[in-house]
Image (cartoon, rainbow, N blue to C red; front, side, top):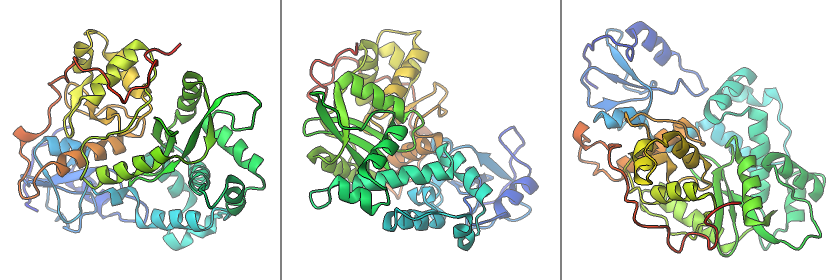
Length: 394
């Protein structure tokens, strides 16, 4: 990687400060920023094997997307946007243990082999997922239990396998997590199976029956309970642990998308919200793969030029992560903004789409970086994917 001196600015760090960060390598995930040196065409993770010399001047980048938009290539050696960085080796081992032994009781000494301390774990999980380690463990355990439901293993069998004392205990835990009742009722109401699907960026909660996909969100989303409550109220159906054919199709398409083989999802979506929300979600559906638009552009397209904040609220209210690509909406100046799944996930998703659509032999140039100036067309309405008679929520 070429070394050169760069001018000082608010985005630059003194070499000694940066190198202290870079060289302070521990088994816990390092500081989440990317670095480039001088006029190099690459950007790297702080722990890139290509060591920076003490005489180097390096530039700090707050996100990989910032680097790509500036025309830089991800370093082929440290692969700064690889999904594996979301799951360092110690976390992979922990997740495997949860899957193999969901009933396991975790103690602080369990992490000695990874060289981790409880405060380090707490800081890492708060930084990456916005929740503590124990809360993360509970969510993963519940996700694993939901995923075990199949024709061969009933809910009762899965609950026993995963260490819950009774099926009722499991459903109470689900109710505390997702904010809706999972207890049997005598009411005559429809049911929507809810389960877990996998992604390189973490477990996702899915709700889908044999007709529609109702919800697809990262399991650690902070307002997941609120989304589930709104869904049951709008759809007038009860969530129940279970499986459906559409869940299998969602997993298949998600796998293809993360492999860079699929650019557009084809799924029957249940879209129910206010007229304004539906108008915004319609714009999201039309944003092309690896393209971005601004909140201002969407506001202009739906005839509400001063409604940028309302657009942002509507974008965040959608219940279809990745499938309804709200990650493609950025600020007018090209910088990233809030994302329910976390800014680091948004950063990765944008980079994944851009790199997947860019020939590996061609270096992305500044002029080729996605812009946020073009608004999607507003003429087409959601087609068969939209839920019938769900144009406005009560």
